[in-house]
Length: 128
Picture 1: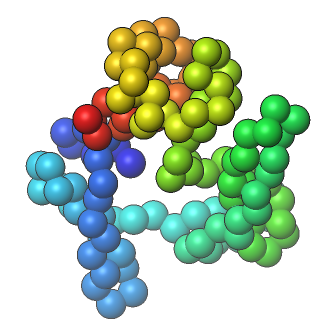
Picture 2 (picture 1 turned 60 degrees about the horizontal axis):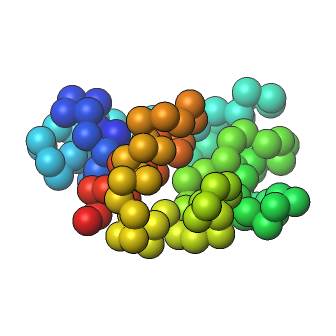
């Protein structure tokens, strides 16, 4: 998750007050209310996605977020371990690649057109 104030990729702490959930940036201290999710297909409003694992032809696994009411696909969710789906490190965990070849992860972060991969690169670099 990215803090809206300090723009850093970070882990946030949820703070629950009655029926609201507030997110708290542990870097800058900013707080914001967590928004409920809405299905664009059926209009349902909910707090948690229904999830399903999808395995692609190249063996890469992703977690799909689906509407709990109509079961329509909404988006792919970030995974704990990002396995490189391409390149010379295909099949390896991105954190392991960063430990082995930090220059490659920096190059990938600067040259990829996909925000999800760029964010995973930044997270892997921050863990070092």
